Image: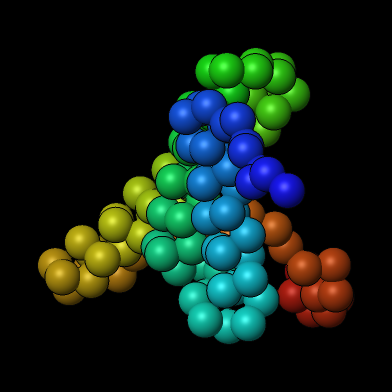
Length: 112
């Protein structure tokens, strides 16, 4: 019996590493190892998206590239917001709170 030889390119290995980081980040958030709103979660997703994007060099897929660009953009926004909050806290300023979504369960008194 001969050994199993796996022919994998550096591009595929890089993309698989990114997929592994995605899984690690989501599992860590699901088990409350890292909060999903933390800078660590966003940096994990940023690293994963960049690695998967690099992996697409060998076998390009437009749909995969579009979703990776989206993940990179959202992760950068998340990281920048966290860094802005940290800077504001160091300066003793209150960071602006800008809710993106309003709850649908607001009472009528809240709407007036």
